[in-house]
Image 1 (spheres, rainbow, N blue to C red):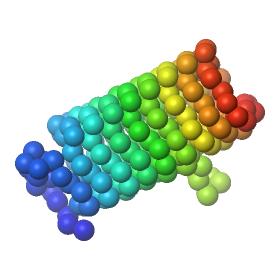
Image 2: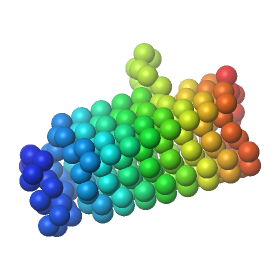
Image 3: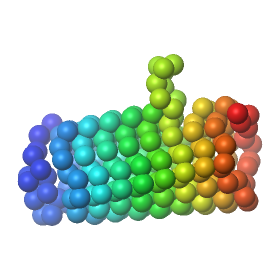
Length: 194
């Protein structure tokens, strides 16, 4: 896997938009302008993307554990199959993002804008019983589409789930205090909130 520094990564992204399979682990890419860049299969573990513009970028199967994407623009970004364990998306703009099949235990989406995001078959639980829960506290998840999502133990306090579609969604022990559930459509789900 080719290791790039910040300058090399920004130059290649501007030139070709292709950062597929590269190692950007631990880099400071905060406030970088990287829309429509292909990060498929890249190592982005511990990378700082705070306030970066990653609109419509592709993160399919990328390793993003521990990355910080707080305040980043991720509208219509594709995170299908991405590993985002312990990653931070606090206050990120993720309207229309695709998180299908993402491994996201312990990830934080506090106050993130996830309107109309697609969240299908994600993995929010950890094998470690002491791991932090995935957190969507205060997130705007209006019109989100959940498909076969296991939200067991997930923190959805103060989240706006208005008009969300939940198909075969498991919500045992989910934290729902203060969550807005107006117009939520449930189909074949299990709900046992605490």
